[in-house]
Image: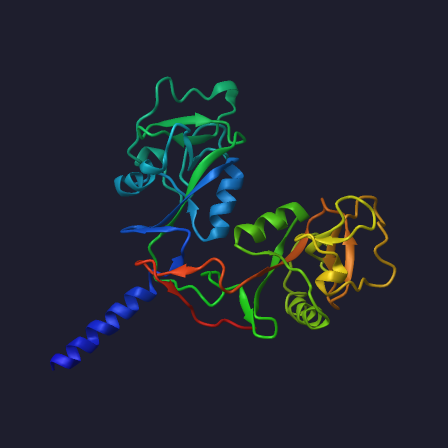
Length: 316
């Protein structure tokens, strides 16, 4: 009987530990995980960064979460997830939909003032007080992930759209929501990856196979037969390089589709791939699907004790 009880306890503990695994660059506490982003960003970029990392832009929606946030704050106020970007300075809500009047709060001196009718986002200072500011003014911020029992996979993320491929020992995600090249680069980086770089004929074929799975699943008014990947030419004509600074030849794959690169529309300085795995040039500011790649061991995954872990395999 005693050994059976020990077995149940071990099973419960194993289940619990599985439920608190997340990326090691976040700090774990009793209510979840948090990460301070020291490099200032606009509010929209901060919101997107947190979402892509697997969390939300933190707000002092409870005394416990506020207590987690305050030690991070120095002389510069930080963005919170409380905003009124849809309602012209009125009806503030947190990212997860909690109205400001349901959040215990105190305003800083002379706040809120909605200066020039343009202050739609709220910041938190080291005294725990709120101010309204312009969302475009870069600020530090905190990302927060509530405690959950969603495990990370072998790709080091709870995002099930990242799939491990044993052929290349890499993870890939096909983004069907179109973005410009710059925003696609931002999205992949925020997910701890990068726009995919083709390193071989084998990988080109693999990416073509992945592409084929999504051709009929993209919705919207944009070209579906091209997707951004990780090369460009620095707006310098034929000087095609990967986003990691290699020539395409040195990276291992430089086969363009017939008739390209042709800079057909002046400004086609960014790289893409076709469903057949061949390369193409595209206008950087247009919006297209894109493909991210990430290493399975970056970022490292920890349990709540800070011990590195490996997740379960999720493959195509």
